Image 1 (cartoon, helix red, strand yellow):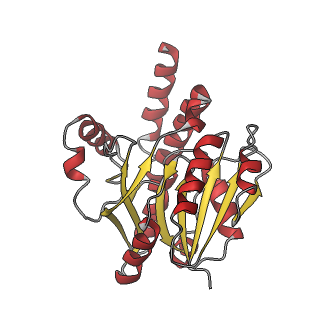
Image 2 (cartoon, helix red, strand yellow):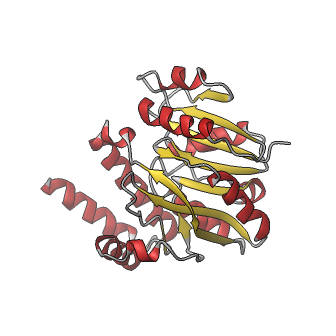
Length: 261
C-alpha cells in the first residue's frame, strides 16, 4: 500500500524541479510513496525532465490551471493514504518526509503538519500564522520584518495554518474538506484549506523538528506581473469567502494601489 503521495506542481521552473526531484532521489523516504508532478503547461522542458526520472509520474494539466486546481488533479490521480503537497522550489533533506508522516501517525487529532522552512542560507521563513484578517495580516508583516522569526520558528505549536510549500495531510481529512478551493489560482489556498480542516474540529501542527529548504524560485520570478495579479485576485477571493464585510474595502484598496503604480 502506498502511504504517501508526494504531489509537486510545476510551471516553468525546470531547474528548481530537477533539484527538488534530485533531493527526493538522493535520500528517498523509507515510507512507501509515489511522486506525481502536475505540469501546468510549462514551456521550458519541465515535464520532459521529470519524465526522465525513474519513479516519477507526470500529469499534464493541459494549461496553466493554477496551484490549487493542479494540486487537486494530483490528489485525485494519487493513491496514498497521506498527501504531501510540495513546491517545486524546495529541497527535501533525508528523513524529512518520514518524520512528517510519523507526526501524523502519533498525533491522531492532527490532520495537517508543516515543517520549518528555511532559505539556502538557513534563514527561517514565517511559514505559519493566524487565520487571515486585516489585523492578523498586519501582525504577520510586523513579525516577518522583525528579528523574531528564527526564534518563533523553533517552537512546536498549533497555528491556524501552515504553508502549502510543504504540507502533509491525511487523505481522509483532505477529502472531508473538499480538497483545495479552486477559486484561489495562486496564494491563500493553503490558509483556506487549513481553515476548512479546522472547521471540522481537526488541528494543524507546525514542527521545527523538520527543516525543508524553500528557495522561492523561478515560477514567480519568470512572470512577476502575472504573479502579483494572481495574488490580488486570490486575496480578494479569500476576503469575499471568509470576511465579506471587508471585501469592498480591499477591492477599493487594490484599485487605488493599481492606479498609483
